[in-house]
View 1 (cartoon, rainbow, N blue to C red):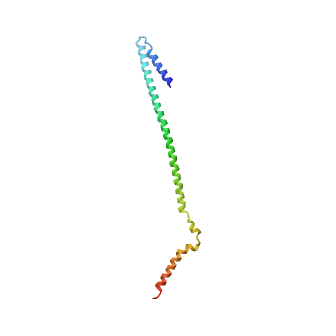
View 2 (view 1 turned 180 degrees about the vertical axis):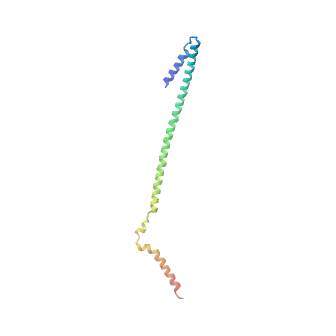
Length: 130
């Protein structure tokens, strides 16, 4: 790149230092050529600056993209962990309690027998003559 810039500068210097033969047509042509080469050299320099700036912006954007990918991975892991916890809670809530399955049949009837006994005692007390 640097060699190209030196080559363009040499070309401009060569054309600019070449003496004209004094003819209007040749002198005008060389003057236009010098101006064109100078404009092209300025354009090349501007394009090089733009390329450098864009290269820096690209590397910055790539670094930012890497940060965003890592952050996205962290969010996905957190979401998966939360989903696993939610699924475990859901399974625990929908599963039949183990205490009912292991209890003997008469233990499941105890509350009903207590209510029935209380009702019999209440009726007996109300029906007992005074």
